[in-house]
Structure formats: C-alpha cells, structure tokens
Image 1 (cartoon, rainbow, N blue to C red):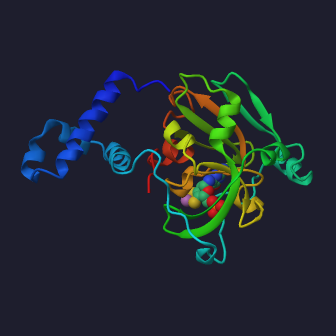
Image 2 (cartoon, protein in one colour; image 1 turned 120 degrees about the horizontal axis):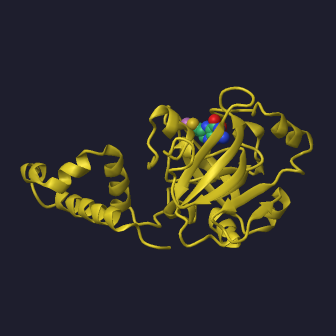
Image 3 (tube, rainbow, N blue to C red; image 1 turned 90 degrees about the vertical axis):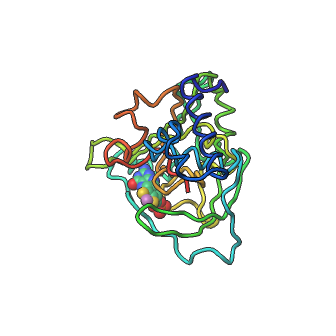
Length: 258
Ligand SMILES: Nc1nc2c(c(=O)[nH]1)N[C@H]1C(S)=C(S)[C@@H](COP(=O)(O)O)O[C@H]1N2
Ligand SMILES: [Mo]
C-alpha cells in the first residue's frame, strides 16, 4: 500500500503528537496548542485518530464464548429487500447469485456462494453494537475479506472497498444501501464476508446470502445483501462522496469505531 498523501499524513502526525501530549501536559497548554485546536475542530477526525493511536492497527475486537451468545439476533434496517431481482435470487436458493468484485483490481471476480464456501473460513463470536442503542452477541462464519481482495489483485492506488447492496432504501427502484471501509479494516483479520449466523445459513432478515462483518465499527457499517465490492482510490465519486448511505443522507460518521 502506498502512504497517505503528504498533507493528510502531516495532519495525522500532528494529531498524534497532540494526542500523546494528552498524557503529559495540562489542559491550558493544550488549549493554546494550534494542532490540538485543529483536532478539536473535527470530532470525527479526533475519534478516528484516537482510535488508531490507542489501538494498534491489527487489534482484535473482543471475542466471546458460546455461552455468551444472545438467545436471539434481531434484524435491523431492511429485513427483506423490496427488489424483484433479489426476490428472483431468493426463489432459486441464491444459486444464480454472484458477488462481483471490480473497480481498481487486475482480476475482476464473480463468485458464487459455493465458491466462497470453498475459500478459507473464519468463525468469530462478537458483539454487534447498533447506533440506535441495542447490542447482541452472535457467531458469524465467512471468508476473510482479505482473501477475496488478494484473489482480485487490488491495484496499489486503491484505498477503499465500497459495498453495494441489493436493498433499495426508499421503495422499489430507488437507490440501494451502500457502505465503505478503508484498508486497515478491509485487511483486518476479523473482517469477514459472512454466510452463516449462529451455525446456520445466513437468514434473509440478516443479509442473505452474504453480509459484511467489520467488528471494530458500529452496526450500520456491516453491509447486508452484498451484490458488489468496488475498489476505489477515493470516495469522492461514490454518490454524495461521504462513503455510505447514512453518511451521505443522515450525517452519520464515516468512521464508526467502537
Ligand atoms: N444492506 C443493508 N445493510 C445494513 C442495513 C440495511 O438496512 N441494509 N442496516 C444496518 C444497520 S443500522 C444495522 S444495526 C445492521 C443490522 O444487522 P441485522 O439486521 O443482522 O441485525 O445492518 C446494517 N447493514
Ligand atoms: Mo444500526
């Protein structure tokens, strides 16, 4: 991976320096520090930088044991996409469904569920935290996203994975749900494309046949009903440019670290 562009990197360095000062100096001095002011001006940047400074890049989200699992894992948002193409896939047991991987890749992929199931798999019991205030612990099984991206040969200038979903958000024919993550999360070992929930085929209510699990972020980042993963260098040209349905339309933060 190439490094961030110089301006951004310098900003992050200054932010990290200012954060490290937090442990050493009093608040009055910090409040006069220009770079600290700059960080405070962006709550989102602060939370992203703090999260990354405090947790090493590969830090794992907490995993639980079978006895911690919630008796029921609810559905939230779309529970059955209002989309005739999706319903035709359901009618055929998803045999004709394919996950497309394209954009800044050398090898475009079209993968069936059967093919995804032959790839390396990972099972993890994690807690899902929804921004609306509920949490539940469940067991997820799927293929690490890193494995799929490696098979696609991602271009060195790519920076983000964008997830395009099958569910229209404002009635039939309207724009579909979408989300995006950077490569720290895309290549994180707990980031999986899940096809099983609690040891059973992923239910329609929870995103069948395939949904993202990105365990260090809030629920809305975990895109369900995956249709296509697009690799891009910038989020600028994806719809409103903020990287996701909730980010573009409802002011949610793009980086939803927990
Ligand atoms: N495609 C799609 N993905 C989505 C949503 C959605 O409505 N559509 N809702 C999000 C939200 S807000 C949450 S909390 C989780 C809910 O996942 P669940 O239905 O398995 O509980 O999915 C996320 N991913
Ligand atoms: Mo959510």
